Each structure stands twice: as C-alpha cells, then as structure tokens.
Image (cartoon, rainbow, N blue to C red; front, side, top):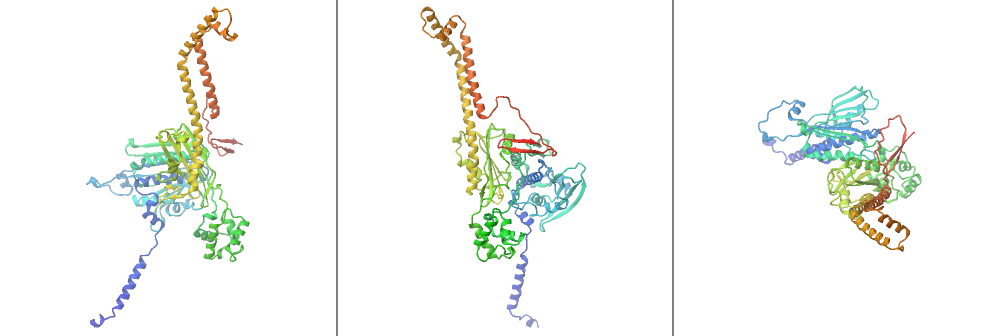
Length: 629
C-alpha cells in the first residue's frame, strides 16, 4: 500500500508545484497607495533629510497660507514658529517614560518643529480630514497658475511626522462669518491613504477669527538649514511685499532664540490667477480622453469649442472637416473611438492656433517687485521690467526681472534670486536658466557694471500655467527651452540693465562735476592771487598813461582795483560764488533729467482701506495711484 501510494506519476507533483508557484506570484501583485508611494520616495517631494524636511515643511505651510489669504483678497498675515523640543518633553508627548542614557556615543539628537498661523479663508469643517489626510486630494488640479509643485502641501509634512515622531497633526480653522472654530487632530493611514481622525469637533469662535492654525511635530535639523529657511523667508518677503511675516525660532537656550518680522510695504495685491482651458497644442492623448470623459457637451463641435482655448465655431468646423469623412460636427463626442481620438491629437499637433493670452496669469507686478527689493535690500539703484506674455508648448508665461546695485547684506558680485509662480527657488541653482543667463550671457561691463566688484542683485520671476521644472525635486528651470531663455535674457535682464546704465552714466557725470568743483575750489586762492597781481599791475600802468588803452567796462574794473574797491578777498569770493552757481545749475539739470524734485522728499504710505470704501487702482511700473469714490 505504501509502495503503491508512492508510485504516482512524476508529472503530477510538478503540475501541483507549478500551480502553487503561479498562485504565489499572483499573490505578490498588489496596489500601492499614493501616500505609501510618497512615504517610500519622500525625497521626490523635498523630504531628503531632517534639515530639508524642516525647510520643506515651512515652505509648504507658508505657501498654503498665502494661497488661502489671496483667494479671498485678504492681506496675508502669517506667523511661523519653530520650537525646539527636547527628548524628555518629546517622550512625555508620546507617553514614553524617560530613561537616563547609559552609552552617550549611541545618540544623535534631533530637533522637532511646530508651525504656523495665518488669516486666510479657513477650511470647511467636513473637508478638513480629507484635505490633510488623503494624498492627491485637493482643489488645485485645474489648469491655472499655482504655487505648489506636487499638490501635496501639508500632507507630506503629515506623512513625515507619522514616520519620524508618530504624533498627529492639529488643525484649527474658521471661515469668514462662522461662529465656531473647527478643531481636528488626525494622522494618516499610509497604506490605505485615508485620514485617521483622533478628534474632530466645533468650538466657540467668540473673536470672529478666520484663518488656519496648524501644528505639526516632526524630526528636523535647524542647525544645518537655518540659513536656507531665513533666506526663503526673506525672498518671500521680496516677492510678496503686501504680506506680513513673523518668524520665530524658540529654543531651550534663550541665546539661540530668533525673531524676525518682515513688515508689509504695500496693500496692493496681484489679481487672483484664473483657471483656464487647455490650448490644443499643449494636450496629449490621455488628457484628450479625460476631457471627453468629463465633458458635459454632447457633440464634437461643442466639445472643441468649449473645452479648448482659441477654437471658435468656424475654426472648429474647419478642423472637423480636415479630420476626414468619419467625423461630423454633430457626432456624439462620447462615441469617438481610440483611432479617432489619435487623429484629433495628430491634427492638434500639426494645425496652427493662436497663442493663448496671459490673462489667466498673476505676476507679482513691477510695482510690487520694486517695493520688495527696496524694502529688503535697500539698494542704491534698482530697475525692474516685465515682458509681455509669451508662449511655450501652448502654455503662456510672463517673465519679470529686477536688477539692483548696492544694498544691505548684499555680497560683492552676482546675487541671484529665482522665483517660479512667486515662490523662491533655493536649490540646484547652477543649472538654472536664470543663473546661466546672468553668469554667461550678459555682458555686464557694457552696462557700466563691474560683475566681480559691484553688489549686484538679479531677481527673475517666471509665472506660467506650467513651469518646466527639471529634476525630480523641481528645484530649477532648465535653459533648454529657447522661448524662456530668450525672455529671461533679452526681454527682462537686459532691459533692466539698459535702465541702470542710464542712471549710472548720469551718476558718473555728477561725480565728475563734483570732482571738477573740488579741483576749482582747491585752486581758487592761487588763481585769485595771480589774477589780482595782474590786475593791480595793469591798473598801475593805466594810471601812468594819459591815453586810455581799454574799453570802458575794463577801465572801470581797473579803477576799482586801484582804489581798493576790488581786493583779493572780494575777487576770491566772486570766484567761489561762480563755482557754486555752475555746480548748482548742473546738479539741477541732472535732477530734472532723473525725475528728482528740488524740494526735500518724504515717504508717503497709503494706509490699508476698510472694505466700506470703494476705490480704483491705476497701476504703473513704478507706482500705483488709488482713486477713492
């Protein structure tokens, strides 16, 4: 029996083994949630190390705050506090009994952080868990100019806090007119990509406060990224002079505490960026299929007209006629086959379309850029320029630039400040189009600027519905896009340099005039003595001769010399007055050409206007005139 039982065909076990192996392979296949993907690849979103994590957390929260305040046209007031949390306090926060260290060499201390408060629009009570606890869930995925790079915002900070400290995030939020404040304490279920809510309740809002306050405890490193965080805050104050920032670092050691206030300089805010439709030359097959699936239009003609920019009815009919006999204006757009969609895509790539306008973009504006530079750097000279909207791959973009000379805390040489959709770019600057243009493509000497000795600030801000970032971290813009490279050089930086050259030449002329004045004043005593000796000798010779040899005017002068009415002292005074008069006239001419009034100037600030007043702003590159009704 045993022998017979073991005498099975040798192929049968193999079949069983094959089935088991196949089943095992099938069981290995599983879906990874977006939260899990970003947790495993956190470097993509700028969470490379504890120092970079701290920097990126501050940046994401500040930018979310600005977006929130600007969306309701509220002048932003943002407070950021980074508080160092010691080991004992951290252990008590997580409910761990503190233990004395035995082997000190095993430990590598870290710092933790909590951040920020703003006066933005706040968040609807029921939406808070998903807005913070579900990755790739949000309101910023339409085609518009946005500050964010990945659409993660505070969610990545929540993932990092879950990985590094295990502590939940706390959110307090209230919207305008609400008599309650929403409070939510939550963390994220990384594997299921859903929020794990600890507490979600409504609390009294007696102060009628609106905005958001977020507290997150993460592992960070203030020591290594201190300068980056402060540079970020300063550059943000440059590009958003209408915002008020208060930054604090609180340490156990009082001498390490930092408090910096970046004051508001203006109450003129850029317009809120508008969502726009896709340009036909900028879409791919997947996007066309998604637009077809989501459109409310019934036929192909309506779909082309209403889902894309720069396609009117007559042009849509011409496009459909060009697609072939299988297409008609009245055909149901949902019935298009994959081959027909490919044909539409091919035609979009080959046909001519008008460029999209820049109406959907929201640049900082020359006025704000100039104010921001003056406020933070205090330069001797500054020039700004904004180019007209231009296009690359169907996406409109605007380049704004500023070039300054001199200033506070500015190093000699080129100091380059880069902005993309009004956010500072601090990393990977060497390969950026702005850096390469400023270093290699601008002949600074031709504009009377010394590239190595002068304190030069170069500010370039690029806004677009799609910023062509390079690298996984999206920290720089490559210079391989000719339209952007040309706009940065020719349309922006060079225009600023031309303005500065005119000012520098006038300043050189004024300095030369001052030098001439000093030289003339220095030689006045010697010249006066020589001239007076000649006049006195001539007057003596004239008195000894009966016949007049000079004209009446000259004779009168010689008589005054001989009678001591004109002395060496009076002659010296007359020469000094003449030098002063010539210098004053030239200085007045210089001031007039430079647009400077003779009268002493005073700073004029327009105070914030309450909502009850109606006014209109008239914008100029260098000022804004406000007319009240």
